[in-house]
Image (tube, rainbow over all chains, first blue to last red; front, side, top):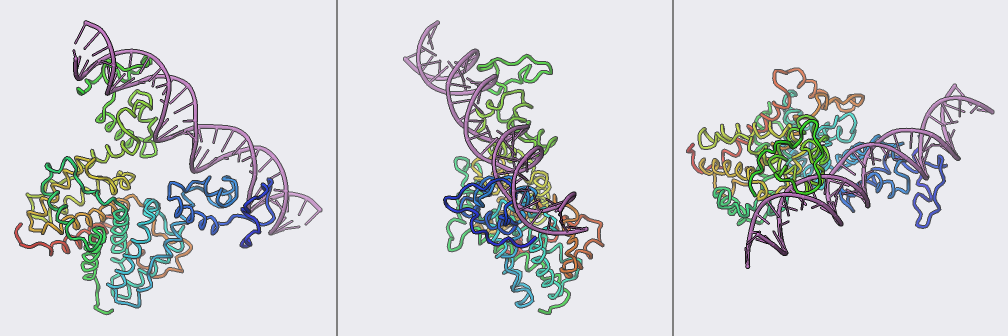
Length: 231
Length: 231
DNA sequence: GGAGATAAATGAATGGCATTCATTTATTGG
DNA sequence: CCAATAAATGAATGCCATTCATTTATCTCC
């Protein structure tokens, strides 16, 4: 299956409708579908990502998509894997372990905070179906090994960090006043006091403060698992 | 609006169809909707929770639901708030802070690992609309205060813990072989080695090991924020 | 006690959704 | 060269949340 050359007319402004039957040059492939999906998401959000809209943006009938993906979830998987490649793992093997984890985790959170609807998909996704995601895990695992972590603890540590990252990605999208108790404030005095105190100190976004707090605790805690101090 | 007395016949096996118009005794209320939703979820899962199925199980037309909830998301919110009341906060103020956090976090994760489709709803949900959720926060906040945490750090610490809990709840639902790299194993040797080593030691579920690892790191790290050592 | 407002139900309708299938046409492999 | 396969169309399916007009009962206020 040769990469389809960008057909001269997949969706020309005033196009004649394509007649039924296999076209001379293939119009669709997984890369094109992924790109179109990402554009659609960024312009219309995940609500706007429908198979019909996707087909429309590719100049194709909806049913044509099913020659290249098995389902809409399959499209989400393609998008997820594309995003995994954007997560910054470049510090592993270059910077000290703690700095590398810090870079990775912040970048991971930032990438997926714009794509939280993918999280239920990723969290349960067998890595065998997502090569770029797998490559990310490989880089992180290698970084942990080089830093002296015993093999049997590495996956657990990564899973824990990832859990924190996914949860934090949701937090980024939460409305600012999520903790406003409204009329019930008097019934929850301790909570209200704490929320009020948080609201005072505001050079950083609260979501970033919480993320930093948790991440540093995890890095410190996990750092103690190393067998050598070699960086 | 008086609590509707359990009508003698909301859904009698061989019932005559109710005629249009307001019935003498109200059939629906939010509590009943919540209970029916929970039953439906536990029997058919979240895919089976549709407004039509919910109405059916309540012996009512789908449109009747909309006299009591604004939308399906509103139903999810009711379910979420019900579950929040099942999270164990009883150790706060009784046991030492670290033990209380441990109990709370494990219980929180266990409750929501069976209800991950709610996580996107909770994570972004203004607490003002969820009184039982708010009560949970109040108990946790009070526990942190009593343990000597400065007010301005409490919310951040709770948010971080919660992020970890939500992410970990997803992890519980992941398939066992999620990390099987399949045919790509040779391309990711470090990752494969670490996964293989993890697979060896198996008295506990891997998801529990990871959760414990992360939670203990967070507890230790956050414990250092306290201003006094009083428990 | 009566009237008007409000509450709670039905039933029909809407528009959108993912997905499937029969069909058509082109390419590929033996 | 022919059979199998791949890639498109277009029609159809069944489900979904939600809305609306309508009906009937209850509640509130004068």
